[in-house]
Picture 1 (spheres, protein in one colour):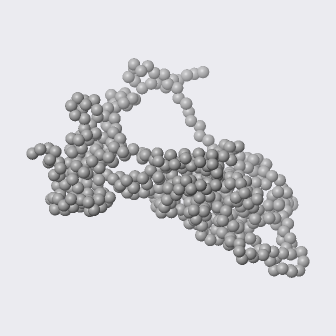
Picture 2: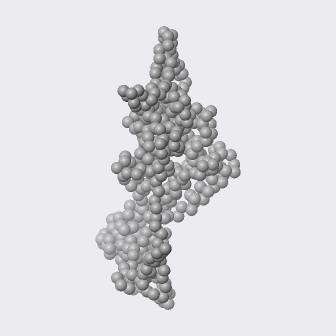
Picture 3: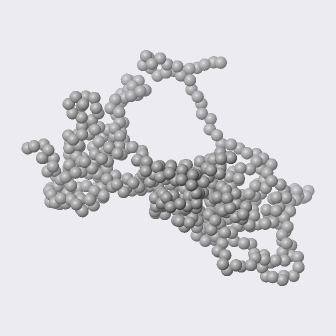
Length: 475
Ligand SMILES: [Zn+2]
């Protein structure tokens, strides 16, 4: 019988193929035929069709490992022998199509016939299927996303920083269904936080007077600054007020970059309503399941891969002085997440503070940014005849602890019940400051976290087939 003809007559049925995308494809457009493996008459796919699809998947997602030891491995192989790295092609085929060893062998026989080098090529080119080992490529092609990203960066630097449609379209593509994505350990990328979650905000005081002024104006003095005073930052343009906080007091203090001699005032906050927060640090850990035969899944893999690059790009430390132009793109993304996706804020890893102990609560070295409409502080309602006065005392001989106090002094009879007038049009508060949580940190020193790596010096002659010896120089 003719070889080619024989291959075309081999069919595998939808019950003998595990990959769910392929199963569905066979169900929709398969051919009624007798299955080579289970011998049942069923909807099936030909060995040729499946083989060609496999060839495309292997070509784009796997790479051949070296057939011979290379480089330093040569020296090692002489003494200890050598095993080719990667997995055998048969294992790869079983894994991606979810088929039996026998079907994988049948497919490889077809593929070797079609694609393995023959004649004199066989001596110089590696076999792709007959005797091949593969490793999965770590990367998928996300050129399309990179290209769109580069374009919006150019577009916002050269054109208006306000939303133009192409930027919005691009961000729609990047962040599509973001609230339906989960990590490998099942954490949602968009989490909800409520009254049980505490977070912190810090302010630097340059002098005792400033410390006392902040204490007298609580809670507002620790909330997001008034719009008129809002300086541009990583997540807001100038004049747009957002709340920059963190999940631990230590992270807050590191983020305000205090200097020795100043003090930092820290307060604990809680949401008064449920807030939806995008955790940027989880964008690098998104897990999406699907079939390598499905072009939509490949597209999604590329997007997820791009998102993990994006988070690195938007959270890299920015050189002081270069802030304004470098922050443009992150400001734009924040604006989009708030107005288009209805998110309340974002969490991202602090670049100023890294937890030194693994026992610390996970996520405590994260920054929390709450967007403008989600950082409305619950006012402290007091009768209007109360005068607030903060003071500092160095203590007395009986109690030498220095301390800060806030006195609420009743000045006259109450004429109005409350100082703050309820405005029915104003949006309801989203966060509240715990007034009992206030601490003032006197900065006495700043410590740095660094790693020191050694530098080795070698000398070798490539003619000697031995490991180069480390030079032991005495200077
Ligand atoms: Zn079958």
